[in-house]
Amino acid sequence: MKSEIVKYLSVAFASALKFFGGPITGVVLELNWIETALASATGMMAMVFFLTYVGKWVQKKINAYRKTPSKRFTKSNRMAVRIWKKFGIIGIAFLTPPLFTPIFGPLLAVGFKVPRNSIFIWMAISAIIWGFGISFLAHKMTYFQNWIR
Image (cartoon, rainbow, N blue to C red; front, top):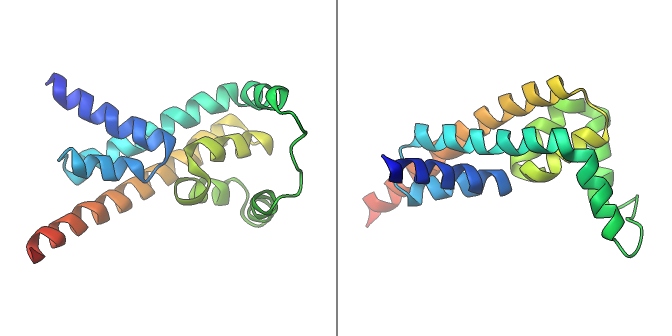
């Protein structure tokens, strides 16, 4: 029982840092795809929750330690602004797992002054969709890989 909890926490932690890490960790730890998906979504949402409440503080601390001011017009900033203008929080949330990561996505939403409840709702929907999709694919890919051997 204790080792199962450690497996779930490992998947959640991996997903909190880089979303694709969760499903890969779930496959390696031999969890089924549904367990992997739920643990991955939970890990991302834990990071979203944390950064939504302390996001402004994190941004202030990062800026305080920088030797030079951050560039306003970088390629990634322009892309984020384009996505924001076209799709709003739904676009940011949908692209957080594959593109922005669970760390940068919530900070981006906080930076655009999105209400917290909107951040939680759309990020949760995104985490569940991506969690189930990627976990299913990761588990099926290993199934086919084992079948070919």
